[in-house]
Image 1 (cartoon, one colour):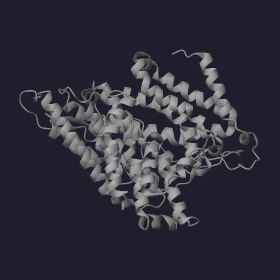
Image 2 (cartoon, helix red, strand yellow; image 1 turned 180 degrees about the horizontal axis):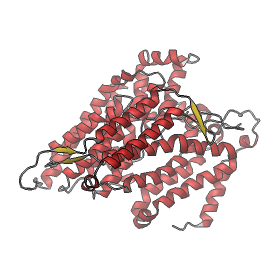
Image 3 (cartoon, one colour; image 1 turned 90 degrees about the horizontal axis):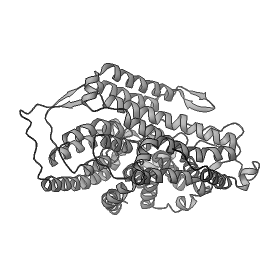
Image 4 (cartoon, one colour; image 1 turned 45 degrees about the vertical axis):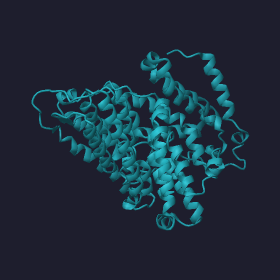
Length: 506
């Protein structure tokens, strides 16, 4: 796709000017601080071990304190491209989405590097090596392994069957991660309903429950909770938000069943007569061994401490590299062990993971200024939000709304630290976290629920959302646009549900 060079140059100059405040040109000024990683190593999507942010050599500027809100323009443009181009220029988007993602990534990275040089290069390398690479490796491993598990037999999507499939996926999500549960259950749901006309709402509610809300019960379910576990929140403390999760699941499942029943009767759908009913059976069950290996590798990376290693100046824990290597081994093992016929019958292709890889590298890079501003807390341009957070309801909605479009892991960590500072300022984390879990548990519940639940509000709110959308689209299910998803489903079904949760719990 050929982009207008003048438009690019104009954007470059405007963005460059916005990135060059006076404080950036005086490294020895009052705002001279150590540089820093975006979120202390908190990662997007699947659970990861938190990295320690290391100061790049020669860094004197805390970027989060000097960057203006204008620095978030490329990220906004990236989101608008995902939202609008499939509607107004579908053919161009289908053939060139990778180039469009690269364009917006470059429109942020080039002026960012020009303005801040080594510090900017460090931030970009940090988010690629510490966040994007583990993110896409885990997604690839889960996508590959789950694609080797095939449910055979007669299974037709009646309202009761569909509700059961979504409920099972929701229960699995807290124990094998939202990504793992979503990749495992989406294909059976799509195949069971291949004869139905109205299927879009099924996939959307699947994203709501299996890919997001279902992961709220344990630290294995969603990255923010895993970060809390690494910071001293006990493994089973998250059972404290079981009532919140059950309320959301109950409301949304009832709504789903009513909708499915309505469309089922409206279509006058009847289960096709395919002759003798075949019993259900799983083929490729040895892939569950690889799934357990994936879950075990992620858990291992949060428990072991094998030291650190520097790669291109980015410090990462040895156990994180070990985890990534094990995940790749699990995926390759699944590919070697699973006959090609099973994957073909499962309608497996690499297109969804390729689309996610291309789009999310653009999202991750353009998101850097937003995360730096968030990390700066009350000293950055997001101060108006951070300072407004006082009550549990504020923690729930502010952490939630930011998690709908930004990385929910650093969002959780930001408000987790805000709560600790508000109630136990100056106290070491080892002493303050147990007190937060007991004396002010409602605040931690609000942060946890907001960071996990609101990930369902947009396609990019959580790692598996876009993947599920891509798999469904490839299977022939028409999916709503980026804004269509928010306007037709999130605002209509999710937000009212969260309002109910607010009145009851916060």
